[in-house]
Length: 423
Image (cartoon, rainbow, N blue to C red):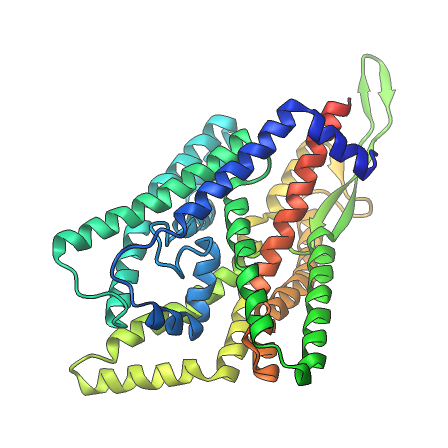
């Protein structure tokens, strides 16, 4: 293994790797420029108050790279593309054709699968753009717009989202790391000066212990994210002895790694969508002329605004969706079948159905740990805000999870490039 100083020296001296990293930095700089170009006619004070009271909008702002809080031309960010990718992954379970594309038809199938995700991004971006403009008009943040201006705004918003998706794919192809993840990462990091400024301008010496506790919790969360992200449970695998050309080859021993956090950050996104999209619907229904509907919508909004109810429901949904998404994306039956076809088996476990059941039992126990971890990470900002009352100490658990995961992945990709050049 190369030392850190030697790695940095190799990165600087290697022209190809240096160009890749500079390309990534250049694209990220372009995305940040787009994120500060706003659409016209915004009431800034109302916009800030709207974001201060909505966890859902703050999460979407994370995935838009900060563009949503400025109502920029890229206000949707890569959110529609992420949603389309999640929908396509779910379809692989329900539609055999999509499963074959993503898993069985090789590189050509994966390219067609990715193209379907891009095409699905367009209608999702249209729906989200229309919804946000109507929501902002209902909050008097945007004035009523003529139909031609309204359509142009939606066209610009959709084009901005597709542009970010394209730039992300350019980073993946010509740079280092996952482009979409790096765009989200850049948006989160760009908010650090604002958070630091809030802490500085609202600093109160009497609250120094609270700030120190907040710093300790932040470091603890970072450590926990690194540990859980990298943690895996190896299942030993042994290959049966084979006879080839009159010679007997002894069985190889390896292992099947099962990650503790198989689902990543997806369950948090699902939970927030289920919990917070209804708030937008109820907000519209409160203006209904039917008294019963308006009263029911108002009651639902009051219930969802209760901090303890919201926090409890959020935790439960994240926990359940972790199991759901893991079950959707990880198929023990397929793993057991492939092992049996290749002449491999788990020591002490019969091939076939018994192996599938064994892997399922291990996965259920691992997912319990991952689900509890994601649930705590999701509600941690709400708990800190309730206990301290300091907005800046409300650690964006989802944002922190994304940042640490992207940094770990980027380090691995750079290490792979350095190792290839070393050889």
